[in-house]
Length: 428
Ligand code: NAP
Image (cartoon, helix red, strand yellow):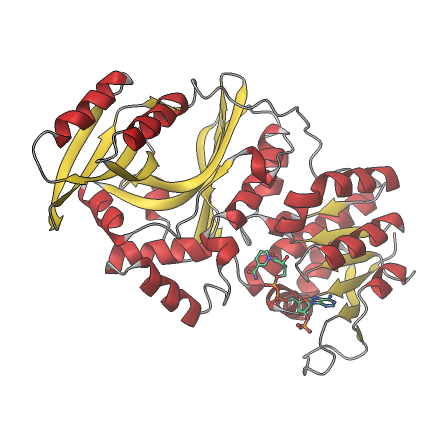
């Protein structure tokens, strides 16, 4: 192998900019560790007029496809985001036998299957450590360090924007709107935060994590995704008074041979490790049959942390090239997706209810619970009352998904009792 690796970089924003900085600041370290010089040959951007801080001699282009077509480029790094152009660039680069690195979770979650197949056919490598939890090296850890264990569950806080918002709602008792505004001011939330606050970004990451943990190739519609955009301050403070912190938790779990995946606001006991993950930080908990619970914590986004994960892919590819093992899929573990039976998916739930503040309503609720053979461990009526409406919070014992669906149906029919939220409760 050459001792110089020529890199073509598409995208010079938050992560691309961080990568250029690391390539220059850590050039000696990279050479010492990999035995190779990483030479940034060309960079593609959208706006050619913006001032760029690039080392001398780097070719700047507005046509990312020229990176795929340049015979001197060994590795193409896609850090543009979006689907269509990114997919075209990766496809074209793999077709030409180039190694490709990307951080694009949306593309991988939506189109990963065809890209993985193409890489396989062409004997090229497609690596994407930075696509999940930014700076936390979780994918390679699952591939390398859990290869001999049987992973039972992967769950975590995999979206920094929503975790920042929830931390402010919890600690400062802000409303969702106030916390979102602050997150936008500080750059932790984008001007259009839809993908983050609706849980879609976390769902993309759970698709990739499930692929690594269980070998399943899920589609976003295969599982339920609920964001924090409908969460209200009342439930955050009610959860707190019951001893829980609300977090947006993505979870993928093997249950009786099936796989259950969801992304949803979740009540986490205040002494659970995930309850201590605050602000924009991420954490992924991997539970192996042999090893038990393990927790990986770190910055889930940001230019330098994410660029470090991108560089770890390139370094790993260089090692593969040296050993002649290049061209292997990042993840080779494949399994058919068998959804878990809803009768077997059982969690305690937090129910947030409103009902007329008159006698007989609580009895009505407890009768419905008895009817679906459910019971609860805690029930509190909030002191606040709006115009004769009582707010009631309940922590149930374990309910199956089927029981929960039946409870929702019966509460809808009993039209005086409104179920405002039903959130999963984690146990220690
Ligand atoms: P960003 O700041 O918006 O930067 C995007 C870059 O791509 C810009 O330099 C832009 O050019 C360029 N670009 C966009 N479309 C292009 C096109 N059609 N042709 C040429 N250049 C184009 O994005 P980012 O935050 O760095 O994110 C990049 C990727 O990393 C995304 O897939 C994202 O999901 C992923 N990621 C980001 C983070 C993070 O912390 N930001 C963490 C993990 C993963 P201009 O400079 O001219 O606008």
